Amino acid sequence: MLIAIIASFALLLIVGAMRPKHSGLSRYELDRRQKDGDPIAIASARREKLLPDIYTLQRIVMAVLLVIVTMLLLASFGWLVGGLIAMIVAISYGTILRLHLIQQTARTTYEHFEERLLAFIERHPRFTRFIRHAPHTRSATVRLESREQLQYLISQSQRVLSADEKSLLIHGLQFSGRTVSEVMTPRLRIKSIDVKEMLGPLVLDDLHKTGHSRFPVVDKDIDHIVGMLYVYDLLSLNVKQSTTAEKAMDPHVYYIRQDQTLQQALMAFLRAHHHLFIVVNEEQETVGILSLEDTIESLIGHKIIDEFDSHTDLRHVARRRL
Image (cartoon, rainbow, N blue to C red; front, side, top):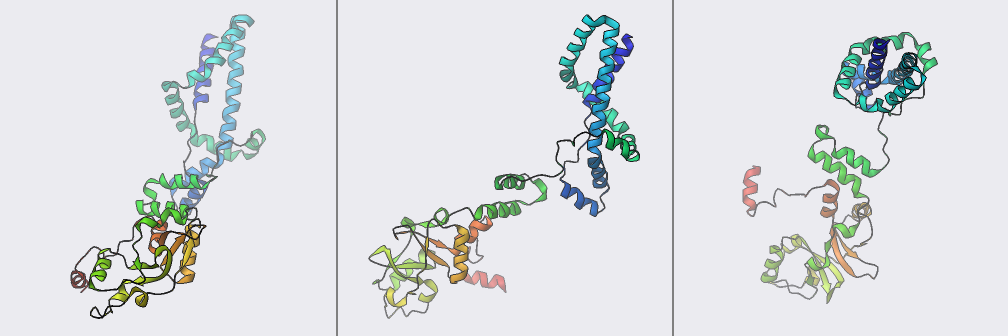
């Protein structure tokens, strides 16, 4: 009788510690790999399909073995002692299942019998439907509940996506939620030129040294922008005949509010066919400038580096292009 108790309890531990293998892939990815003829994906999809029945059989066998162990204990040691031992077994059962030896034995046993178990379930669909419990709680697909969860999944994609692809996707997801004020060049860093400024050789040299290609033209202060001055327009000026910024500027000025989103800004750039917006607040005060380049860089997640920007000598670029 003692041998029967030990054998039944050992079998109960092994069955309880069994953990059917999961593919770790979503239903979509399994389907995709099956279409490509991946034999591992085909086997995994078959196993995932039958998992609810496997767990049902496991619970049934565990219940039967638990009843057998309890009855054997009561028959061997009486109601009092046997009931006490059965209670101790029930309390310590979960702790014993975590022992490495038990888990290793259960894993080896399940791998040995898995194919026979799957074949039995497939051969007796009526029986498995009759005994089937509620489906196992594990979902076959990943359900996305938030944008942040999707960003996390992208960041954890390991070798599926390159670093550039991850950056592009994450910044693309964040793009619509970012505002103009987050990306704009702030007011204090704006390089402007007065409307009455004479565009002589020294002024032109100073403008070129800034590295910018567009400059707001102001009337007295930065809150009164009356035009835009473009560097490429200055190249045609006759330096011997000085002219004012007012005569060389483009009088068309475009504005955007600082609380608008970058998605709205991008649409505005496309509609206006313009590359620079003056950013204003609710009081119509200038708080910064926003360029199309700044907006696109925020969308793609890295700086736009013009191959000509890295060379001070454009003849070097010309020779390389030949």
